[in-house]
Amino acid sequence: MDVASFDFIIVGGGTAGCVLANRLSEGSRYRVLMLEAGPRDRSPWIHLPIGYGKTMFHKTLNWGFFTEPEPTMKDRRIYWPRGRTLGGSSSINGLIFVRGQSDDYDHWSALGNAGWAWKDVLPYFIRSEHNTKGAGPAHGGDGPLWCSDITHRHQLIEAIIAGAGELGVPRTEDFNGGDQEGVGYYQLFTRKGWRCSSAVAYLRPAEDRPNLRVETGAQATGLMLDGARAVGVRYRQNGRTHEVRAAREVVLAAGALQSPQLLMLSGIGPEAELRRHGIEIAHDLPGVGENLQDHLQIRLMYRVAKPITTNDDLNSLTGKVRIGLQWLLTRSGPLAVGINQGGLFTRVMPGPGTPDVQFHFATLSADMAGGAPHPWSGCTFSVCQLRPESRGTVTLRNADPFEAPVMRANYLATETDRRCTVAGMKFARRLAGTAPLRDLLTEEIEPGQGTEGDEALLDFARGSGATIFHPSGTCKMGSDPMAVIDSRLRVHGLGGLRVVDCSIMPTLVSGNTSAPVVMIAEKASDMILADARAEPMPALIDVRSEVSRTRPKPETASAQ
Image (tube, rainbow, N blue to C red):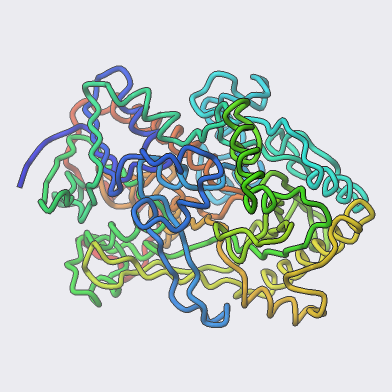
């Protein structure tokens, strides 16, 4: 074994990990190591915005997870793509910039997470942004992460916007400017026609720093503990096992599926689950892997009367040449914006409140996300419930770190989720029937006009619904007995260990998760550095006595 020592070790070179690598290595004061299981992000399909159709099923750049058979979804195993390269899922996602609603973060704060209200997190959103709208009270103009407008106006998206107006949904130029409700064009994480992933935005400018080391092809297999403190990481690279020590902290940024998996493999998690796999219990923490949440998307597909869709561009040599030249000459067109150009947030459930569904409008149709386009002119209305009540789990398959964890999403398990999903589908149909779209959309392909009534629509959702790629919540922040981390993202009862990724969300945000994860990592880096300045020489102490005064623990909690 090779043994090395750093101040901070970051496990995971994805969306959050690249932010942390940059911020923690600034000023050259601290030695930082970032471990990424996948390869470097050299594939051109990563950097070309439309390329995520190629990376969606890539055997190397994508973990390619599947859930267990879902009883609520006709026992189907749902495909869950997750990025396995520098930049993580920000290197293979749909590029959409959405923060969520201010109420999402105020709710986190109301749950007892001080410092996570909207007023607290907005400065970190702003700090991260280089928004083409320019700097202002709601946006940043000189941050590392580019958020670009879609400048070309598409005939189909314009018709959708006009149709939504007939249903009372106003046009908006900014889903992140305060009031999320509206219909319009998404902003994308692109810069001059190229994807702006977390690796591009944060890691590239920092990678030459002498105090930052980035290891790819390096899969963490377990945490090293000294009593009640994390002191290092074991990882496997090129067939060899390595040990690295962290003088200050280990930071897990492996995502909502693999951060809880690594904790459990290291003996940190629910006692019964660890014993089931013969893992020695280091710290009984019952909430690890619980509280799994995800956005379930239902895709309605339509045949379009005119050859104006991305299907038409990709299904002919002339179309491919045209959009290729458009990108080469002007860095615009379908290759520069991906698939989902238009969005809509509205409320479909009765009663007051903020938007409860989100639409992604794609000028393309295919049998599944990332699949080959249909041979006819087509488009897709994808709708998802923003704040699902259903909760799932992430558990271990066995004690082998190279085996995928067991994921159970438990979609549509509650009445509210079922009613909201059906109501969202009905809204999509009303939208398709508005005057601006009535002649443009000639046929509903999926679910089809023969699918009528709530039960039939729900049956369609169970049989065809899929993830929209936002698993979250499995190492939730809080002070209740099922919380895994505190409001400073420190693992309860352990020193020298934090979690910084989507898993920390106590409740899923109302929208896409990439921008919120960047914000979380920006805020986490400030907290980590502040704690490092306050404690020049880290002490190997048991911090659980302090935690126990603020966080009740179940009677089964270990005294280890």
